[in-house]
Image (cartoon, rainbow, N blue to C red):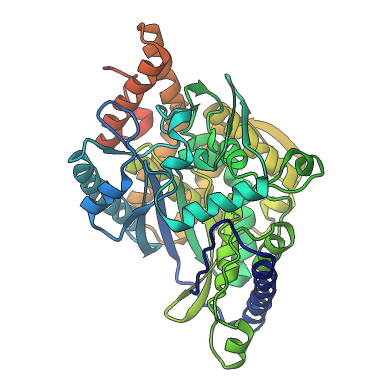
Length: 500
């Protein structure tokens, strides 16, 4: 890719050329869809996890370059902040013992990375937001020393034109400003990929949007930021505010934020890519030499690099992804809803619940999204972020009567959604013992009303009650969390913390 990185940004000609290339890429995508050039379904899933580095004191360590040098594996990469890493698990075919295979690969990889990090008094902590992060840690000087992160920061800051405001009203109120996008680095997530055919894409994406709230309710793991107790899953409001290119006047005019739940159900993947071009100006107008329509005319398959790059700067919670494998194009739904952690077992359980549920819902003859307004799905998502395992959600009533009813998330999951997820995993031909074990983890959280966020909050208040001040309490919680995380018993079975 012929990257043109220019100090101070891009000029008007760069942006005009990029806009033309984006339109060509979109037209190329349309042709690929019309000509049915996409890969046949292979039931492939992928997994990425963003991680934190913290020392034996529980405090963040700004040393991902040193740790990556010691790990020396292409499975591990930098992320936005110097205290972040990302691990990528190779695609697997859904079926058989894949859940246990994913778990074993993650345990092996994370265990190795943790041992190498310990050589420089750091360690791997898999958690949505590291509780000990302070505002002073999240500054531009602590962005990873990688050109694309520096450029992305410069472009978002230039588009914003003023400092970013972080204002989150939760259990407590956080209000502060940042001169860079560095606070975004606090948000560490699990990204679940599912390859789908163009004909099934819309049903899978709609299903994923509909259940995003449920994923958060059972999987919340990010209750603290800068020493404040906020939402049970504080990543979504933080991510939106930390990447918001809209100054207040544009927000007041209804301009959409780049971190976006969306505003409607869709009928095709093309609609989402087209929305990204229509609503969001380019942040990184870097042009490739490829002419996508000419490539198609010559019988080839274009990479659509500009479309892919632009798509990566629109932070949907369920993102459409175009990719090539062995010269064949494919589409994926990238689910970005879940926080990292608490344990490998919990991560794989969350994945099992998601993959089973979207399979079952996508195949229903009377789809969920035809019975629930999109606005309800968006409101459910916010409600789940605020209240986590204690959330109540609006959900279609069973049967033909129609209408919505308000139901505790844990009751909805146990009574209605876990059986659906089990049926979906059965359709994927997963090993029944694995299916039952990992869905049993989700059932256990609901039965005990415990997830990562509720454990952290309970441990924090126990530490305060023991006489520790806030900073010491958060450090104690982080240390105990790390020990239990590496022991890998699911979070709903953890003893009360912090215990040290």
